[in-house]
Amino acid sequence: MTSPTSHVPSRLRARIQAQARYRCGYCLRHQDLLGMPLTIDHIIPQVAGGQTIEENLWLACHRCNRNKSAQTHALDPETGERIGLFNPRQQILSEHFKWNQDGTHILGTTPCGRATVIALNLNNAEIVLAPQRWVSVGWWPPQD
Image 1 (tube, helix red, strand yellow):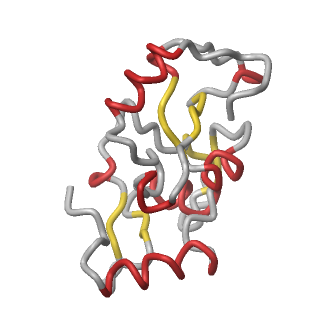
Image 2 (cartoon, rainbow, N blue to C red):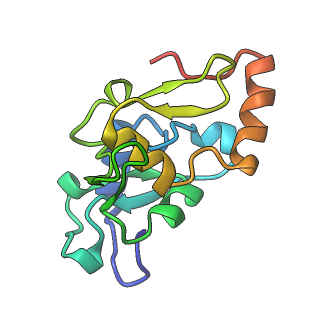
């Protein structure tokens, strides 16, 4: 999460927003659907030595950013191995995640994906409620 002491210059913020297409790098929720701007996430948190540079920044919704916090790794529930969390700047989301049949839950398909789903609590009851409604009007799940 961006701390109050780390300033992201407005031009850099605008580049990150455009690169992320105004979507959370973890749950893919668009800021228009959320009704609020997304936050700038330090992929490698500052407390772990991550810098406020373009290569280490991406967009995240408030919930994903808060749940990720200072984590960089989590346990894969299938193997019990400690795995690096999904990096939206370096990895392709569709290679690690898919949507369930009704489009309301994100499923990890790799150790990284599974660990990220658990660590960021991507399918908690509050998160799933909105996509149920979005699916009914064709806004969800994202097709790319």
